Image 1: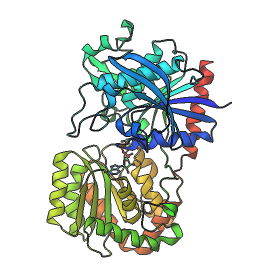
Image 2: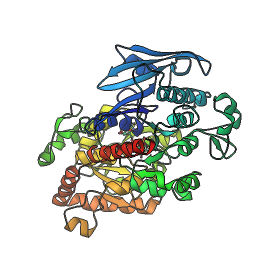
Image 3: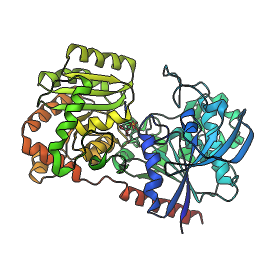
Image 4: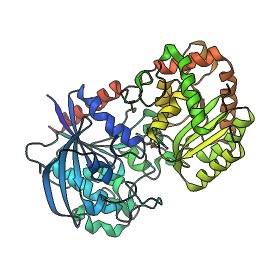
Length: 482
Ligand SMILES: Nc1ncnc2c1ncn2[C@@H]1O[C@H](COP(=O)(O)OP(=O)(O)O[C@H]2O[C@H](CO)[C@@H](O)[C@H](O)[C@H]2O)[C@@H](O)[C@H]1O
């Protein structure tokens, strides 16, 4: 029997994306079809979402949802079966999903995402005519309260799981919002939404869910330690029998070098020579010299998590070794400025584009020789997976999903033809410099470099296996609840 699943999230590719969460939420429905799971995804009605909806049906109306008029819309967009919370008072704003153009969070984020979660729980409780989910899967803090509303209401018996895409974002608010959340008094407490004296949305989801997943096996282990647990390690250790690490996959329809309309020249593992045209276009785009030196790329949020502060020195080191660097990203303004400064000092060797540009990210993967990912922590990481598929060799810190997906070019792995990248110790400038030295040496050995590219392209990081693991988990939760 087909399982009816409702997914609740604050982003979904290709409608609204600020990072990897959107990719995963957008890819899961397609990946789960083959596993006998049909997915409806509930997302907020931001302007970018509303603009792409086309034909809609109003399936539920709220005269007053946390102070705003709202309705739930049903729509089919780009193969996705969507439920959209249309609440202009909360979501019809200029700026990003979580804040204004200046990067300041919206002050009413607790209300906006409590509203999304309340709507999720209402659907689980059966407010829609003719459709009610068998299982509810919610993502990150913005949707986590769905699990809490369900637990303290009539849908308590409906199985629910929370996926942690990034434990650094927890949805922490003041204690005094609690009376406005519409939860019963018993929901306040260590076993509920109270979190270090305030209100914790992700925390509330984690204690309420029947299962907790995170996006790689290594990250599932790491978050049990104080360093990576970020205040939640105690809770997570207490629920370890409910914790699963399921690796993200690649949407191979969108990320496919053999048939990618966003790059000048499509290619496969046997036609690596064709990458030269993409490399040339990439160099033009960033004002870089045309030569054979290793061309490294970065496609990333420019933040401390991603180790981008370490890149300022490392970029100098790369250039000193003769290499080149193309950076696409945005985030911390100090880091943006420092990278732009490095590009000014090294015209032709370093190019930086501040901003968000999906098509350009495809060109970078298709033309770059190597991608640098010096993250301090990385729940899964998607850019190294895209890089592997595109023959762009990943150079990654040994953390989380990066450690789970890249095989270091040590002697044994090279001998076995298994090496797919370079893996180095995280959070250490010296280790990153060492990795760049190795990158330069390996890149100079053309047959070996091409063998690594091909090994990476052969690796299967499609969704097939991970979707099967999610489907097994949904089935076991449904069986447990029966
Ligand atoms: N400037 C830019 N222009 C265009 N595209 C850009 C871009 N900056 C980033 N991207 C794209 O955004 C996505 C980033 O995904 P990641 O998984 O690397 O990190 P993120 O930290 O957002 O996600 C969190 O959630 C995901 C999903 O679970 C986890 O893999 C990850 O470890 C966790 O931190 C990729 O698709 C990348 O190509």
